[in-house]
Length: 432
Image 1 (cartoon, helix red, strand yellow):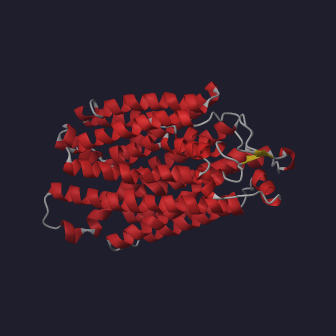
Image 2 (image 1 turned 120 degrees about the vertical axis):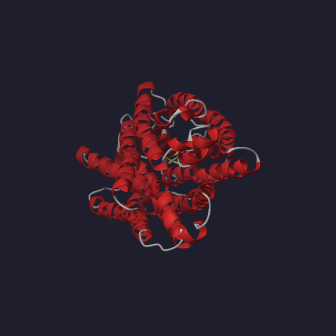
């Protein structure tokens, strides 16, 4: 397969281990704030929309209120915010490959931090939606640029461990977000999220640029950030599509099964007196995701195979979804326990993010590693929209959710066959 032109690794800048360790730590903290801000809307959506939609909700029954809040949430979160992620992923990815990973880390943090600060002052749903788009746009750059930078700085044998640390620490941002929202108002939570992001800019000062990127820039490498190359020729497009599809179940679980558990679980028979809290469900799911990211990353190192680790976690995801549609509705305790396990089973984001960076050459690496996660996040728009449509026209909420699950998981399992094994490969190459 003619996909790469080798470069001389001796020309790349090699920072000290201490500097590399600092970069990994800052990337982990950056992803922590990224997830904190990304999940904030899901954690405060009911409280914030009840305040902003008082006129629309007046005189409606509790069931009608829940339905209207759910449909509005789908628009703001699964459509507007994820569309911002999709557009931002493309823009930030191109910038990262053309101008450097560092510029994206600064620009994206500044964008989403300001947007989240402004979220604390919205007075209507239209302002809320516009700022969720802008926040999504900014958040799109953090993970891809950080994982690319870490992947290119850390040695090939330790690369998986470093990216696993980044993802596992970062995922805990959702857990921190839950406890913050229990202590302060939804406006206060957005203010804290914005300030956390701005504080990261100070730490970014000590982060170094990737030596591989600097060399590619110096040598005027061709097609840096040429996103269209991801779609041609067919073998590269197939590899890119497979990379994206393997992770779609993660955001179906988070974006639909967890965020809208207060709608799905009652339809499965969970007593109304034990109606689950979406915020608490997100917290327990992300506890599981953090453990799963740690486990999947270590498993890929142990097996010396990214593909085998993904396959194992796909199999566990099947078990988790079976439990969700059977055991979870027995009691509130059972529900949160199942959600935690489902989170663990879907906790292969660390391996997925690593794969996205490893599959492509230096001139396209950041574009691929930034767009792929955000296309996956954007998939929450069509999976959530499909669930909402099926709920209203085909069956109950749980039947609609099951139908979507039966579609996305098998596709992800088949897609695993389309990625090439990338454990331990040399990343010093370019796409032609």
